Image (cartoon, rainbow, N blue to C red):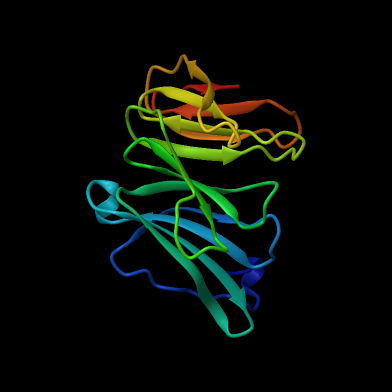
Length: 183
């Protein structure tokens, strides 16, 4: 983690044997980040979610969770400062509680190929998650329900990214390997 302009606070933490795929700052805790990682570039092996915090002594590992497949993306809950969701190579999403030593709390497995992207709605008035997969679908989730609410089809290629609008409730965008962006 570093600061723009090269100011103080820069630091690094090595995660031997892991390749980072996504990093996201906590919306609640300054200096706290989560990183989704995988062994062997996500082709084989396990994944790890690490929660880190930068303080006056450097970067500290707060929590580490292992999963049986590579983790490709991570997003923080917008209604609980300890809850995160990851997406993985086995097509599942995992809900983790960083305040607990073990996890995950829940697993959602509906994508038929790698779940490569996940994002939590930022409008806090709604608690929705969107995921994108190599199965060419985006899925809408309500974590309280435990299954997807809706599946969006229309991409002709792998979906690499899904993201909620920070301004328009219920609106998300997705991008695929075929050069297509949908909103």
